[in-house]
Amino acid sequence: MAHAQIHHDDAAAIGELEALSGRTVAVLGFGNQGAAQAANLRDSGVTPLVGNRDDGYAAAAAEEGFAPRPIAEVAFEADVSLLLVPDEVQPDLVRAEIAPGLQAGDTLVVASGYNWHFGLLEVPDGVDVVMVAPRMIGAAVRDRYVSRAGFPCFVSVERDATGRAWDTTLAIARAIGGTLGGAVVSSAREEAALDLFSEQAVWPAVLAVLRTAHAVAVDAGFTEEAVLSELYLSGEPAEVFDHVARDGLFGQLGLHSRTSQYGQLRALAALDDAAQRDRFTAVLHDDILSGAFAREWSRPEAGERLEALRREADASPIAAAEATVRERLRS
Image 1 (spheres, one colour):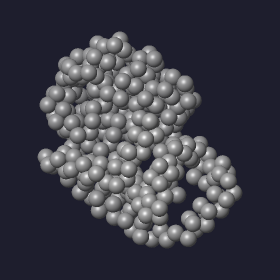
Image 2 (image 1 turned 180 degrees about the vertical axis):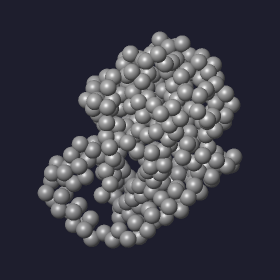
Image 3 (image 1 turned 90 degrees about the vertical axis):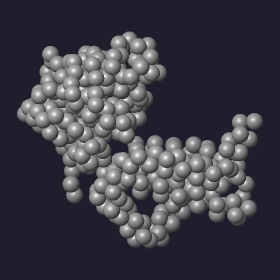
């Protein structure tokens, strides 16, 4: 069984933030993650430059007391740049606006391993490339920093051109609050693969289970309101998952009735996982690790395919029923 090294705030190896001393730090992209990480950096004493195009996010940055400027200009001035724009725009943005401003000794920090692992980022030689990837949405990254509750974070050094990349990585992780909940040593490959695996294996399976459960229960004559409320509209599944995170997958069962515990564990023991294991293995190896998904998503027509899939999902029976039930519950 493999275990990763984990860095915490009290680890001597992290020290303070000396690795950032005298270096200009920049946040490129003031979206959900960018806004949260910029605020956390500032509160840690590392006020960053902010690079963003002239849009609503730039206006939000100005409202928060930052002075947003064009990304190319900020990337040229910065020594450490946090790349916090969406995955799909990163390759072109790095090529056209960021890479020209990177110099030997600089550091590019990615928050997702996707583009780096699949070879989609063109970063000049001599530049450190590291990953600091919070396992939280931006709002939680900010809230948990403020409350000092912490959040887990994946960290890695992908290219150590200076010999000091780990110091920079851990300093950034600490400054945004990533060592409060534990900075787990990982890799771009592992982060990207597991992120895609959750999105393409685990969550589709969950969605399919809910879709099938809805169809079976409605076919049995139960009302849409009762079925959807029981399945997820009540918010109970979110509460269960919250306790799974805090108490463990099976530890949280103690919060359920004994009837529920018996029913869940009896049914789980009767399930044959072989077919699902085969499917998950195929998704991980054939679609993700092979690079097949990355190549497909990089095609120009992929965006149109996404919109077609969204329209298909929105037209499904469960989505139609949900819209009606939500409206009736609000009335």
